[in-house]
Length: 108
Image (cartoon, rainbow, N blue to C red; front, side):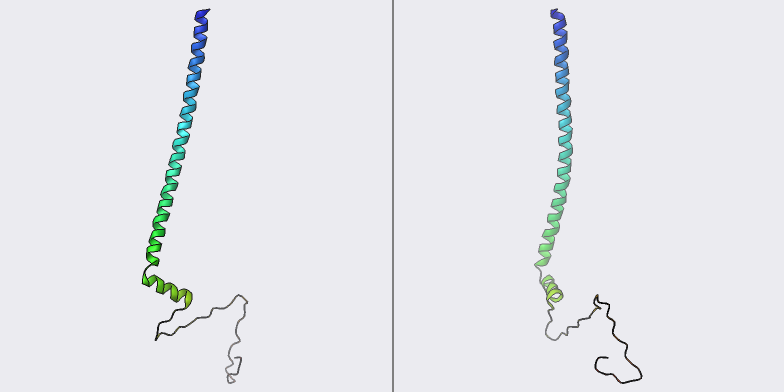
């Protein structure tokens, strides 16, 4: 009886050790996969940081400040003339064609 009990206990012990190993192995593989995903995400963030640092560096130049002032604020240097090209609005209004046979009038 002692020998049967030893065999049963040995089998139970081997099964328990095997299950623990398999569970640990599965957890290890999951952690490796998660680590790879996080490393890839970290690389993306580092790339984004480099891009933003480059933009910050560019934004500190006089040329950038002048360009933005011209585009957004309408900066005009002395001696320059600012021309604003009007684009049609969304209302669909089209101006009336000028009349060739009559002189121009107010509203033409």
